[in-house]
Length: 172
Image 1 (cartoon, rainbow, N blue to C red):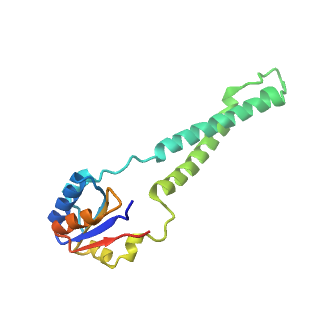
Image 2 (cartoon, rainbow, N blue to C red; image 1 turned 30 degrees about the vertical axis):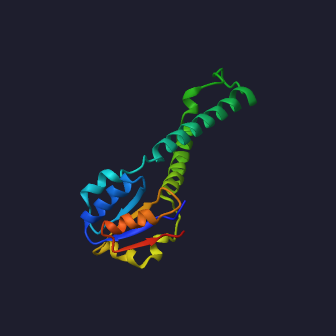
Image 3 (cartoon, rainbow, N blue to C red; image 1 turned 135 degrees about the vertical axis):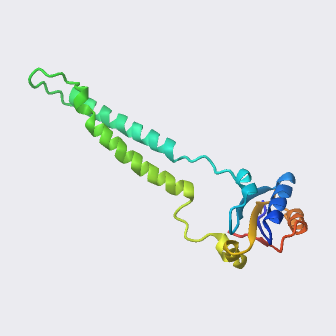
């Protein structure tokens, strides 16, 4: 697979036209960088599904169940102590610790899942090495496209026909 190409455009219309042509040719538009929101791009780059909530739910409920099982085992099987005729498995007493432990583990798992989903910690991105990337926040429109095959010359020519001022290859 060839490295993605970053194309620089002067107008948002040229950027949108290039993105549509690249997608129609079978290439995959990875991202667009613009100085202001471009409404036509919102449908094309829908955000991926966020994995943080399911990870937090599974970790929290799993940790709470494990802590409840640990308390049950220790009071019913491991060290049964009958004091005052109370039942060995008194579930209302066992609820506080699993709840607190489940919340703690869910918060830790959520933080880890957030970092993983965001790709953090990442101190340097290959886009920062391209000098034209700085103008994406000023007056230029950039499109990052992954070619469909190893030879990216067809994609490069297509982007240049759409009005790209510069087409640069990204190296990780």
